[in-house]
Image 1 (cartoon, one colour):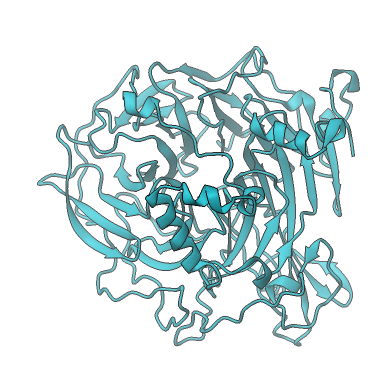
Image 2 (tube, rainbow, N blue to C red):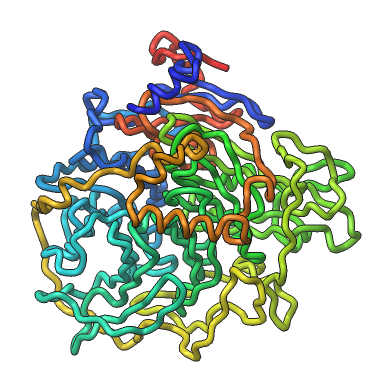
Length: 610
């Protein structure tokens, strides 16, 4: 891999290439549980050349035995479904609940519906490299439905698939074509290519409805930006949608009304990943500029960047268990509901990962004006095989407030955050963040509920308000039609798609300054246009210069794999990572080693502890 060569060229030597099996933060020591490693049953490293990234999905089936966690992961043409034992017991790879091997196509992404999951049945969506989406039940071991089977809707690779929060039937699918489709599991896809009618369009996006006499999929088609739509993520309350695109733009929409709320531009290259903070106030994106970028939902601006990776950032995720609020005198951590203390964080209960990210966070203690210490923890993994953990603290979030304590791992670089020239507001004084108050998820059985879209009164240049009187963009009169069942799946990529190349690896921070004028003269006209567009946004609120916003330093930055990392998921008692070789690793949180604390070190993989 190219990143191994670059590391050696930088003089990293043997020490840099050593794999770490534990690391220390202010909470304590995180330890790799080698007996909790999941992979293909033969445990042989997968030859990942030309394969789609390994992805992992979790669901809890509320098994009364106390072992209700289930894990799904794809490796090459294979898809596995196991009981996930986490920090409690060693993984038993000899007994997968379900295993599927596909011909002519590869799984690219998947997502469980937490609302319908039981010990007897789960609904799992699987996207494929040839463009189809399959709905399966790996417990009942049956294929229930196949969408876009004839590839009449979209022929490009599925990049991301998600159930719409609060719905048992609606799901959203992104493709490398840059299109985003809304489906209903009760509807068929039709035998002819769909015809579309423009519903709404704005800066860098358009939304079309499907013209049909009877209910059929897709319900909607979004075209977002230029190039692939690499990932999208719903806000914790399910009302907003953040999209990371290959054109380098983060676009945030009010989902029900399909209205653009705000945008951000990467420092360089495409954006590959995106996630929301547990309270919905901040969005973190990563991509080909090797940076993690923190964007404020209410102010619609970049408030910080983090530089620790040496190559593309493939996944970003917030740690809802470590995010905290502390009173300044005396320092103490709080947990509970808003009624107990106005500044406390409320996290979702139990192991319900669909709701565990919902929380409430306020900037200051409104009762007595004392500053409150705020820390958001998020992580990132990248193609450089490194895991980075970051702390986003109140000196970055609220630079004009007195600090409650000195913060480390934050390099402000004598920069001052540009003031918001008109924060989002409305008549009630609400800041506009989607989680100032998080109501219970609205029921979304077969249609989206009525919504008025984001509140008006927005004057920030990068934030957008609605000019349409339309609210919900889905006709609630859609009815279910007959569906076909598929016992097998054999799909085929076109010749053109087989020859699609991955993005060039040299689009990184290290190469930005090394490009000579001679090389620039050799760029194609398209590349020159893209560079000119980037130059127009650099130095604006869309994309501040490096010296214009604080630069975060990672709390932890460790090499934890031999191949590029593709997964980072924070759970209550551990964090989970995966690499392209097909190994899914469990890292126990401090004090959460459990029954595996007596692992035999002799059975551990080669590596060092730090």
